[in-house]
Length: 213
Length: 246
Image (cartoon, rainbow over all chains, first blue to last red):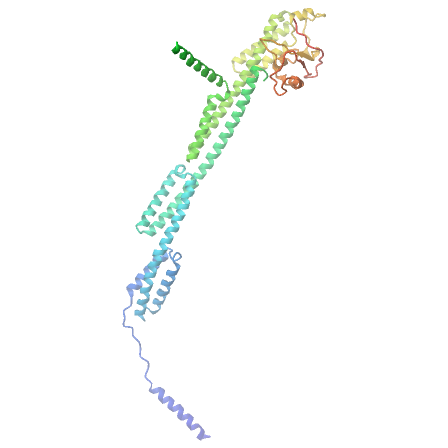
């Protein structure tokens, strides 16, 4: 029985001896500098996209930018080279989001302003609501100029202001139009009634003069 | 010579145009306020179409006000015409009374009729046309029983005092006459005292006789010699044909 246990103890002792003799793994120290500038710029562009609500207008490029930005954040400080590489990918994607997003957003706001302008024109607001319509026209012209100058955020705001003023003008004109229509209908009815009565009196008097009233 | 002919022709055209224009002005639709209302109505529509709703509304309101003024003026004109028409008929009855010495034959009636006629004239001048119409009608009512002097003299029984119209037997037939100075028509026939003494009752005559006139839809055309039925207007007894006093 004792003889049977000897090989087992020998094997365990050998394994212990081997394990104690193995050296600890080496600690990896990143020597590349943190990509602080890239991170700051990407963070700023990311905030700009969100502040202007552009992510909804260019969701593909934004998602790709976000994936790279998130991955860069995970390795930032531990694998700075990789982080820089990822941020270098994220930054142009954020720029693309800004460009594409603003293009679509400006077009969308312009379409809204154009629709409001049509409503105002339909009500002849240019004459009926001069002040509001003039303010809308000024805002619209500024929006066009801002878009041409690449000032998209300002252009979006101006188109929104223009749309608001066109709606206001349309509303004022519509109310005035209703009142004018009512007055016109009333005058028409009164004049028609008077005309009928005058003709009846004419007939009565003519008949009375020549024969039977 | 030829030049003179042209001048006369041009003058004739102008006179014709003037006559047409003055004839056209007789229509009440030529009332200046009504014309102005129509102009304003057109302007209001133009303002409306251009989008100047404020001006359109103001102009419409002016148009409406003027059309109401025109209506009021025309109604007044109609009342004036009616009052004048009644006054003229009252005047005819007064002249008839004077000619037939109503002052001695019917002194009470005559005094009342003259007083009513004076009221008719005064109220007419004061533009109280309804009062004038009422007074003229009273004259005609009062004078309805005054008969021509000759007829009264020829009557078998003396009739110093007039009898009420309702108590007399009135004619049921009238023969349409050709009187050049005052041609017969439903209006004038209804006005005769022995018919209704009220021209406004002409329709009663028309309805009763429309089947015998040339055009049943044209009450203006009646022919001399027609024997016109005179239906009872308020239950009065009627019989015989009216015979004009020679």
